[in-house]
Length: 233
Image (cartoon, rainbow, N blue to C red; front, side, top):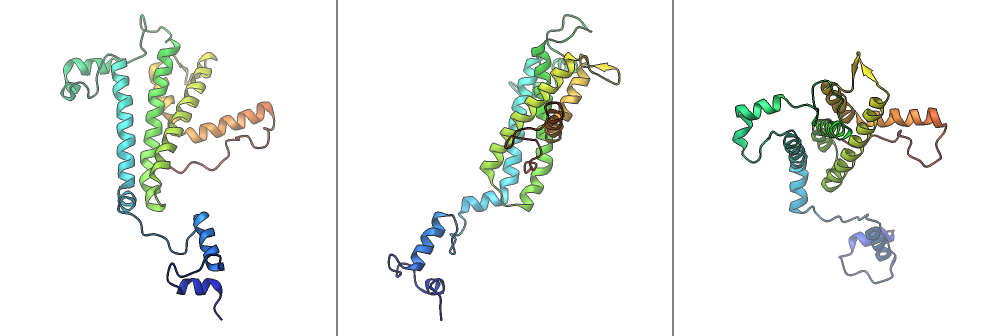
C-alpha cells in the first residue's frame, strides 16, 4: 500500500487538493528550504559555480591593488595611477626605494602613531590577501561556492585581522619590544611582523584569547573564546 508521500510523487502537480497530507508536507518543505523537487540551477548560478573562484580572486586582488595605490601615494610615489607607464620611471622607482615611515625629521627618529599604524594596516592587509588567494581556489573546488558570503567574509576577516595586528604591534612598541635586538622603530621589522600577523590572523586571535583567559580567568559562557572553527578560506 502506498503511503501519502508515495502517492504525492505519482500525482501530477496541481491535482492534490488543499489540506491533504501530501500538500501539507510539500508546503512545510518549501517553508523550511527543503524540497523533493528542486529547481534546476539558473545560468547565473552555473556560471558562478564554474567561475566563482576566479571572480573572487580577481575582486579581492583589485581591492588590494587599491590599497597599494593609496599606500604609494601616501609615500609620494605611484603604483598604476594616474599613468601606469610611470611605474618604471626613474623618479618613481627612486621614491619607491626610499619608502619608510612618513614624517620622520631624520633617520633614527621614532615614527608617529599615524605613520606607524598606516604601515601596519597596509602590510597586514597584504598578508590577509595572500592567505585568502592561496586557499580560496581549493575551497571552491571542495565546496559549493557561496559568492556573496565569501566576499562579505573576506571584508570581515580583513577588518578583524588588520585591527588585531595594529593593536598587537602598538602594544609591543609601547613596551619597547625588540626582535633579535631590533626595535619596532625599524621599518623592516614593522612591515615584516605586520604581514605575518595578517597572514596568520586566526592563530593570532587564538593566542590573544588564550592570553585573556590566562590573565582574567575563565570567560563568560557564550563569549568568543577564539577557539571557534577557522573561517572557511
